[in-house]
Structures are given as structure tokens and as C-alpha cells.
Image 1 (spheres, helix red, strand yellow):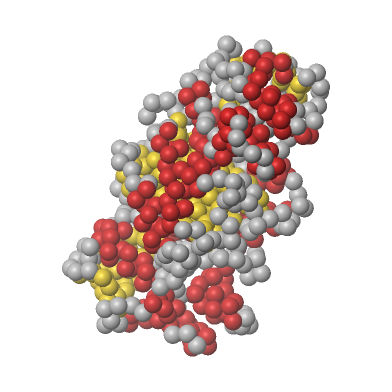
Image 2: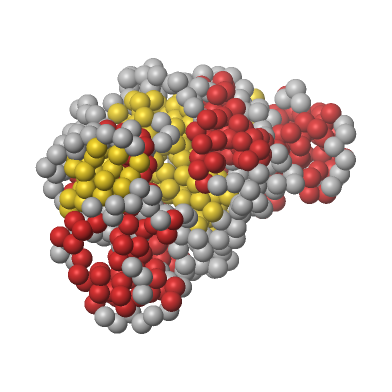
Length: 312
Length: 312
């Protein structure tokens, strides 16, 4: 081991030191103590080396950003604002302190984007780096009472929106898997989106009029199917509407270079963590509408091809 | 894989289904929503197969109980009561659904002991079973304001107490490591304590007069040293006082059979998650006193032997 447990704990306590006024007891005791309002959102996400990230594909900073973003997106998807995080981390012992510090800095960077603080954690040994983050969040202004936005609220007559065009992360993964050069601006953008997507937190934070919301962590199709099922309605996606995105043409060109259909990238891609929402006259990219019934249609098909579903 | 992701999620949602009145949105959306008071305790713990548990040494039920107990103990150690848990789980794919169900039942069993509910989680693939649990807790009656009990509150003149005699779990580990028969009542008790310790939650829940409290997750010596340092005082442990424990003689006899000194078991053993507390005229087993100064003495030594420290 290139480090001792107490060295790592001291390092993490230093990186995550917070002056958040709602933090009463931070790292160093059996647990943290935070001020909370009367409703709290809680979500957890685990990322495993070799499955969710590869050490030769992503820097420690990028890995930290990405797993944190996945958690924050879940909080925003409820119509809430992230407040506090705890991080459980298993290390192999082959990492150096600099790598661990950069992982922590990536977590902190992403948390800082939304004003959340890291207030505790746990350190373990394991055969693979594994990161489990739990995020808390709250609704409205501190102390107030506001209703969460669930997946089950979509209604017939609603329109369907995404915050941004998905597919960039999926394209970046393809580039890394195929070992293609990362030279063009489009390739760089795609790989960056895979390594550490830049989430549109502001979109979700202002979507108080949405009837349903979710972030797209698996594929857009999977997430849309789940939302339609939870809401007992039918989702009708119009693939032509995606062409209105400013970056559709760029992604389309890249898809041809990668020999992947742009529909596979957009509908089958996940991990961009774009926000999927329903409602009337929402901001964002309109991609379809909600009708009575069940299931999902896209491109006129009642059933989406399995290439648009993905599981890790 | 003997199962699909959606099968496991459906199974876990079924096992963890809760009618807790403070749970507004449970498993199935992007995050859970819970009612909270104005102060929340949060702690996280990760356990890795092969490091914290072995599949051939412990049942899934016992593994679930043990990792959950470690989290609950951290909440009680703050003077708080556990309320909600989330569970992030990585599976190898070689488990069967029955094993996963029993793991979940172990988590639920332990959570039920203290009235806490499992309200969310994440499922990942990995080369080893890894379980990360985050526990929330609150102080006093719901909505009230109460002060946490920190590690840093011990004062010169206080007495030092443990809820129970530690060392049984360490003895159980030794029996399993050496492959000794598990036949005598003492051996069975020790192995059971290692596999899934039975915590004295009621002790911690009623210790409102303690000046400092912690659970013993590493070794008693390590935990006592940390508490003395956090409180800027000196801890004086009197090993003879442990003999007042009703089960000291039984542990002593077992220690001789194992050829380990009983002091190594008691002072160097962890994972029983006994509660260590300071204060005046507390319940529990009196084991020493606090004086001005720094560090720790035990058996007249200024420095505890390294065999009493243990790290995983």
C-alpha cells in the first residue's frame, strides 16, 4: 500500500472541508449531523471499476465528477435541490495519494456546481475501486414544503421534452471501445461527455411546472418506457423532432463516422443524464406527446428495438 | 447470470416494502422522499466480500444483519435514532435470487429492530459482492431539537463505560480462521457474534447523560484513543474492571482454548459494536476514568501494544 488509512482519511477530510452553515458535525465523528427541512430526498448510486469506469479511459477527477453527477441528477429529477453527500469508497491499495485526491476533487467539483457539501464517508479495501455516493436534497426554500415531481405524473395531452440532445456519451464510449483517434472537435466532445458529462442542472431546477421528470441514466427509451408505465399513459416519440437540436447535425455526422445509426445513439444512449420531462409548454427540446393508453411508440413502431436498451 | 436486473429490483422492492408513515416516496422513482426533523444524522459504511465478510463463513442473512448493524451503531453513537436506510449493492451475477433475498431479509431484520425502513438503493455489477449502506437518524422526538453526543465531549473526572464485554466477535473470527470446531456453547456464541453481532441498541438509546459516545467498530483501544484525542483528555483503562462482566470468565476460558490472551480479545477486538461512553454514574460496565492530559494508559502502560489495533 502506498498509503495508510489515516493518511487517506486526513486527505479526504481536508479536500471535503466545508463551511456550509447547515452542517453541524462533519467528518471525524461516528456520523455527520446536518440541518434539514421537513422533507428530504435521498438517493444512492454505486460505480465499480471495470464496469462503470475504466482507469485507463478516465482520470480520477472525471470518475469523481461522473458518479457524483449521477447522484445529483436523481435529486434534481425529483424537483429537489441537492444538499449533502456521503461517499463510501473501496480502494485496492495500488492507487497513489494523488489519484485519490483527484477523485475527491472531482466529487467536490461536481458537488460545488450545485452547492452541495460532502459531509462523511467510509473507506474500505477491495479488489476493485468502488464508489458509492448517497445524496440528500430538499424542496423549495429551506423549511418550506413543496411537492416532489414523480415519474408517475405524466398525463394524456402532455408534451414530452428533454433538456438536451442525448447520445454524446454513447458516441464517446464507442470511440473509446474502438480505440479511434480523439482528434476532431466532435470526437473530443463525445469522449468528454462519456468521461464526465456536463449536466444541465439549471434546466431541472427551473422545471417546477413539469408533471413528471426523470434523468436519463440508462437509455432514453428505457427511461421513457418506465415513465409511461409509471404514469399509466402512452408515450409517442417523434424522432424527427430531435433534428431541431442545435447539435443534431454534428452528432449525426459523428454517428456516420462511427458507423452507428444516430437513432441508436440518441434513443439507446444513456449516461448523458439529460432530463426527461412531461408537461405543457416546457422549456427544452420537444420530442413527442403523451396520449391515453400504454407503452411507447417511436418512428411508428410499437416496440423499440432492443439495441436501444442498455444495462449496467 | 441467474437473474435479471429487473427481477432483483422487484425482489428487493418487495422485501423492503414499508408502511412507515414518514416515507412519502419509496423504491421505484429516481429517489425516495421522507419526512425529516430539523436535524438529521447521516453515516455510510461499505463492506466488501473477502475483506469484511466471506461467503463461506457467513450466510447472506448474517452478512446483511452485520453491515446494517455497523450503520445503525454509528447513528446511535451520536445519541440519535435511526430512521431510514438506502442500500447500494454490487453483485457478481453468480448469486441466486434466494441468496439475494436472504441478504435483503438480514438487512430488514436488523433495521426492524430499531424501527428503521429501507427506502431506496442501487444495483451494480462487480467482481465481488459489495454492500454500501447509508443510514439517516434523528434526535429526540420527531420535530424536536436535541444535541448530538460527540466523541469530543469526555471530561476529566468522567468515568468510562462499555455497554457490554467486547471480544466475542474477535474470538469467533479466530475460530473460523483456525478452522476449529464450533461445538461448545462458548464457541457457538463467539462465532455467532462474529457473523452477526447482537447490538445493545437499548443501551445507547437511553444514554442521554453521556458526555461522549462511540461504537467500537475497530478495536476498543483504537476507539478509546480516538475519543481521548478528540476530547483532549487522558483515558485510564483498568483492565481488572472487565472481570466484573458476567461473561468475562467464559470469554477467558475460551481465550485459553484459542491460545490468545483475553486482553488481546477484549482490547484488540472490534466488530462487536459495543458502545463506549463517558460520563458520571452511567449504566454499563465501568472500565476506567478520564483525567487531564492526553493519550491512554492501560494495565499501567503508557502505550498499548500494536496487537490491540486492527484495521480493515
